[in-house]
Length: 89
Image (tube, rainbow, N blue to C red):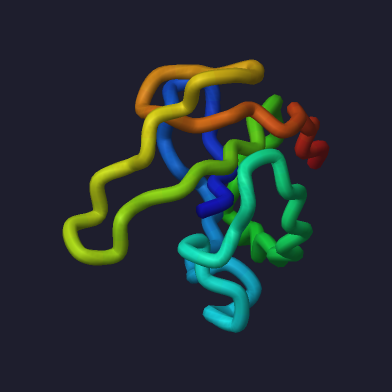
């Protein structure tokens, strides 16, 4: 998943889906392999100006439980902070 969250952790935009649209399942990945998976976030015009974090993570399709983050700039709920961006008026 890719989420854009506000300062209170509320999701303001998201793009969820299997890696590479299901063409390269995680069961095929090798340890340490880097897999580029592009996503587009569509931000509503209703989103207020301010600072937002872009988060990434993985979850189990069967039950929606997030996989643990064991390295990197992490926040709660097992997500990695990719960047912070500013939405201006």
